[in-house]
Structure formats: C-alpha cells, structure tokens
Image 1 (tube, rainbow, N blue to C red):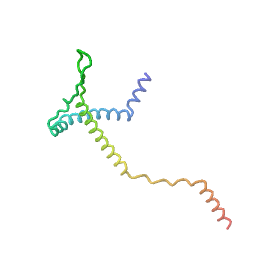
Image 2: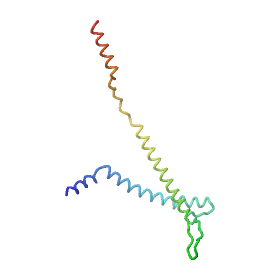
Image 3: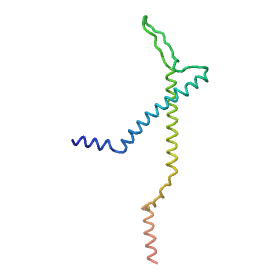
Image 4: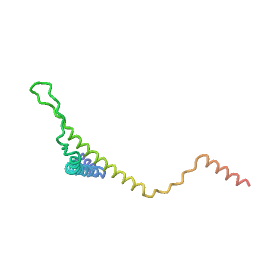
Length: 134
C-alpha cells in the first residue's frame, strides 16, 4: 500500500501534470499542423509548381532479382513531413522567443550589497584604529 501512495504523490506533482498537459497539447498541435500542411500548403505548392502532387512523388528502384517487386522510395511524403517539421520548429521558436521577451521585461530585483572583501574589512579596521588615536 505504501508504494501506491508514493506513486500517487509522484504523479500529482505539478511538474509531471504540466508535462502531461504539454504532451497532449503538442500532439494536438502536431495534428493541426499536419492538417494545415496537407490541406492548404501542399495544394498551394502543387499549384505553384504546375500541378505537382507531392504525395505521388516516388522513385522506383529496379529489382535485381527475377520475380521480386521493385522498391519505391516515397520522397514526396518525406518532403511533406519535412515541411511539417519546419512549421512546427518555427512556431516553437516564436513561442520561446516571446516567452524570453516577457521574462526580460520583468523588473529585476535590486542587487544586494555584496559583503566587503577581506581586504576592505582590514582597511576599515585600520581606518577606525587611526581615528581612535587622534
């Protein structure tokens, strides 16, 4: 029973819950970006490139053995996923850049007076002793 309680405490820590929420939101954002790329960006790219459909771009490698099928390299799908990645990476860059800008705008705490060095302490003591002698 102790292990179950310990696991519950671990699972309910703020960082773990925050990470789980971020993971779910990231997965949903990935689907959103994929839908955007597949439904809007790639058709526009195909339109601008004289009707090329990237999902149909393949390279057919000949088979070296009789009766074996040739190998298809679907590089068009790779290009689409690469564009997906670049969009996600750019959006994440912009989010992090915005967060960093907000962090910088927060007023910094005033610097605390540093403790005097050993040399300064010694000089202060000497000064005080000289004042006493006068």
